[in-house]
Amino acid sequence: MNTDHAIGRLDKVLFANAASKAKVMEIASGQQMFASDEALAVLLFGAPGTGKTTVAKLMADSLRSQGPVASDGEAFHWIHCQGGVEGVTQLQQLQEQVARTVREGSNRRDCYVLDEIDRLNEQAQSILLSLCGHQCACFLMTAHALDQVSEALTQRSECIEMAEVPPPLLMPWVRAISRELGHELGDTRLFSAILRCRGRLGRIISSLEMEADLLHVEAGAEEH
Image 1 (spheres, one colour):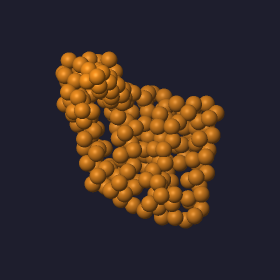
Image 2 (image 1 turned 30 degrees about the horizontal axis):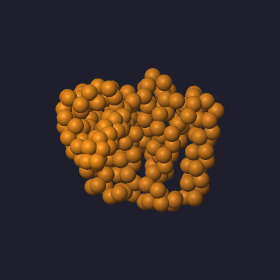
Image 3 (image 1 turned 45 degrees about the horizontal axis):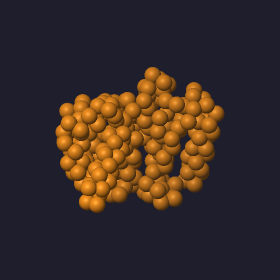
Image 4 (image 1 turned 135 degrees about the horizontal axis):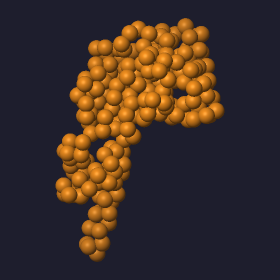
């Protein structure tokens, strides 16, 4: 995915906070990399369903398209963080991967998307903190609960809040999805889907897809 495509998709993401969107777009477009040369991490935080993971992946697509391509051909590496010992193992493997890049003497910078870092325990977060200063890697991270992320890690990151989008602002978006699915579900049903899914974007899409499938089945039954 090229930079313009990634930026175009980012621009279509719903943001409740204009300042957050501006910061995301600045970083993704290369206008502003990070707050300082040492802050090689972005932390998107907020309630579930606010688009953190989608935005992090699109930012990674954009950043990778502006520099050397990762050796394995992937635009970025995605890690869904786990708690306890499993999370420590994940970060130890990541630590070795970064160390291998350093030993190779490569001038590329690999992008890593780390989802839900607030699930990581203190030991795992400490490993992650030690990696944030490496020039060969940048980290795009997400967290639901910012208070579960170490203060040292947040200080080394560009923290951007992803707030929940109010239901009225979601209506144009869900109308467009409804049209793409081939059915005009009507504003009452669409608004009910938003409330039922508590504004979580992924759940809203799944709910609309189920309703559209049901309408297709009902239409088919009526034809017979």
